[in-house]
Figure 1 (cartoon, rainbow, N blue to C red):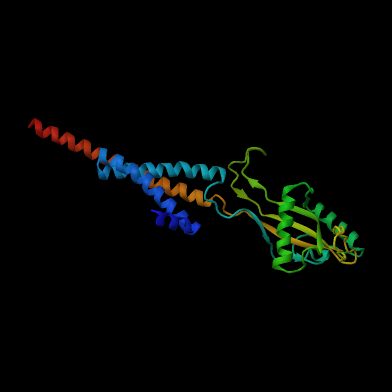
Figure 2 (cartoon, helix red, strand yellow):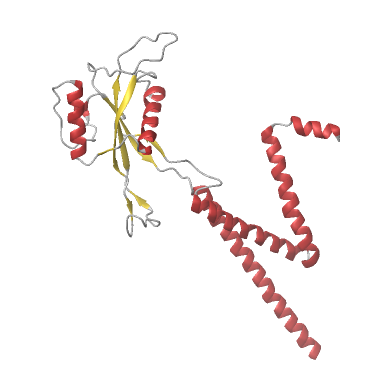
Length: 273
C-alpha cells in the first residue's frame, strides 16, 4: 500500500487527472448500474442507466450552452484584416478600403492625425473612450501584431493614442435590450492609431520618463476584424448529440414496453384457451 501511494503521488498531474476521471466514471455509473441491474435485469438496467446518463448530459449541455461555461471553444478575438493590416500613412486608408474618400495630408503629423480622425468619424467610425474595455482588448491585440507578428516596433517604442470601431450589428432584434435570437452578425472592424515615441535614456534608480510622441513621424494604423470564435459550439454539439441518443434510448424503452404488453396479453389469451 505504501508503494502504491508513493506511485500515485509521483504520477504526472495529467495522468493523475485521467485516472481520477476514470475511477469516478466506473464508481458512479458502474455503481448505479449495479443497483439498477440487480432490480430490473442486466439489459433493461443498462438501457435505463444509459438513458439517465444522456438525459443528464442534455441538461448539463443546455446550461453550458446558455451561460458559455464548461467545455468551451475559441474565445472572440481581434484578427488581422485584409487587404492590409498595418497602414503606415493616412493617405493610404482609402486604397486599403478603410475610407471611401481619398485624403490629402500636407500638415504636421498631429494635423494629419486629426484630419484622419475627422474623416473616420464622418464615415461612421466610432472613437472609443479610454475607459471602454473594448478599447483595451483592441490595443492588446494590436500590440501582439506590431511587436510579435509584424515586428514593426519593439515594446516601449510607441503608444496607442486612439481606437476606432465600426460595424458589428446583430439581427433580428426586437429592441436594443432583447436580442437573444439575434444570430446574424455584420463584420466588425477596429482601427488602432499608434504613434512612435522619442527614444529616451533610462537612468538606473529612477522611474522611467513619460513617453513623448515623435512628431516627426507619421502615425501608423492597425486594421483588425473581429473573430467571433466558437465559444459555445462544443456545448451545442454535446447537447444535440446527447439529445439524439437520449431520444433513441427512450424510443427503445417505449418499444420494449409495447412488446411486453403484447406478450402479456397473448399469454393471458392462451391461459383462457
